[in-house]
Image 1 (cartoon, rainbow, N blue to C red):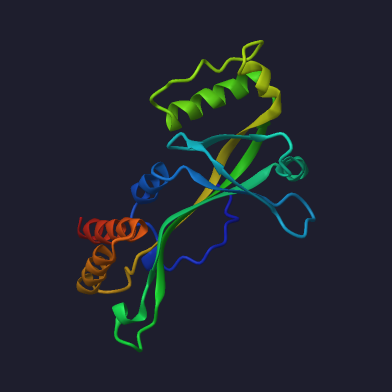
Image 2 (image 1 turned 135 degrees about the vertical axis):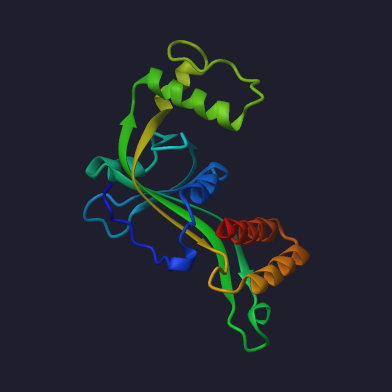
Length: 213
């Protein structure tokens, strides 16, 4: 694998095993596709849903007017950035009124080689895969190339296949602290009770359990 990803990951924030970041990525299917192109002031950043095959491939589609195509034509490389379970940890949870506040979060960054797909049949296959994932109840007509209603709309989009070449994952949930301290923070997250608080709490407790195995 190429190693071109740069994100600060302290040893205590690294995944305890590959299943940890893989389980996070399976549960989070929306991220930012970042295309640097060549000689640009800033990269092109596109929020999008995607489908990961659980191993080395990601599929998605975007509209033809999207500005990302020019950057991908310049250089067919991109970063898919996915994050979640983010929440603020007040300083007084860590100590007292002089405590240092922090953030808890999980983040996975996938460096990818990019294949842009214009073949209608392959785009239709991507859409069928995405619908199977995001709309498992069905209730949609078959997505096929040709003169069907969906088929006539396919020229408005392009498919993207991302071949993953490198993965960087960070799970920042206080693992530099004692188990007892993290259990106290987990209880405070439960009491505060926001959706992301509860997701972060699950990670705190899961990492305690994984470290014991």
